[in-house]
Length: 173
Image 1 (cartoon, rainbow, N blue to C red):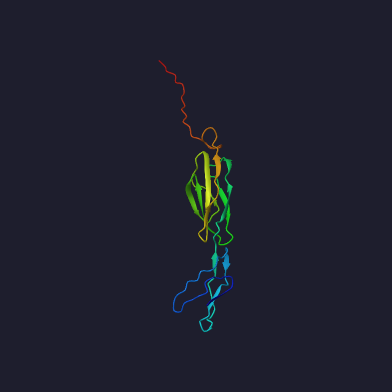
Image 2 (cartoon, one colour):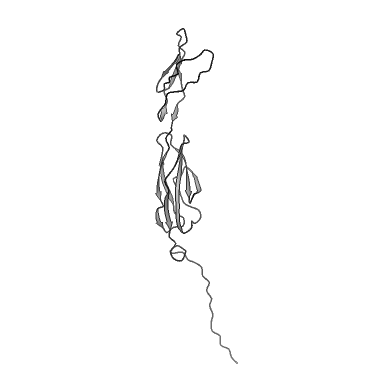
């Protein structure tokens, strides 16, 4: 007979001599488990030493994500993207940022500033968060627009132009 102690239990109580027996615990809720123990009683009533299982964490819940900025209309070709995330059980291992459906960053940062200019006009972005148990989720999408003014450049940006200078000439006979 298999005996259980601590936070873990199972309907499996029978064991056959000289065979490996796989024990499947009853459903465990998301949490860290540090006190699960197993012992065996043989057919004549001898108790084995109690085995304490290594600590483990059950995490079946996706992380959550909240997008902060940019939103609305911005006057910056390299706006800073920022978001936050949480995962109460195992923690977040990485975020992947998508701008206009293209992955642009994948690490543990919660901010990103593009290294090259985005185009003027409308953009969408979202973030995928992955926790340490490999559960992942996508945030909702956010939209923003980069306003570049009527001339196609940001206010304060100097646009080179071609200038021709001519001066009148006097011709003497």
